[in-house]
Length: 91
Image 1 (cartoon, rainbow, N blue to C red):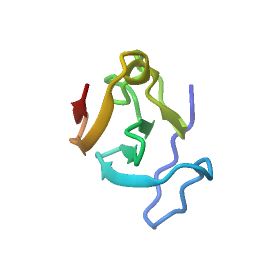
Image 2: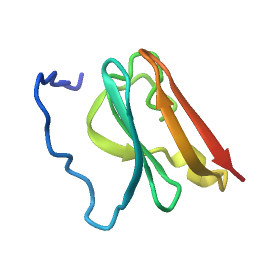
Image 3: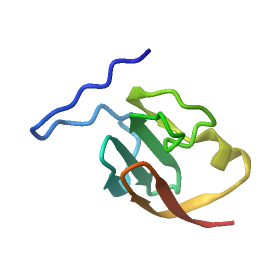
C-alpha cells in the first residue's frame, strides 16, 4: 500500500515542467489539477475511487487520468469534495 503523507504546511508540487496548471482543487485527502491543455491529474488518498484511475489505489505522485484522454475529453473545471472529484468537460 502506498504511503500518503499528511502535511500541515504548504508543499511544492513535483509536476512535469511542461505542464501549465489552470485550476486546482483539494478534497479532504486528495488533490486534482487541470492543465491548460485540459488534462486532469490527481493524487492522494484513493480509497473510494476519487482519483479517477479506475481503482482504489492511493498515490503521492500526480498521475494523469488516462480514461479522459482515451475518450477525447478535455477538462474545463474540477471540484473536489471530501471523497469525490467532479469535473466539467468539453467533448
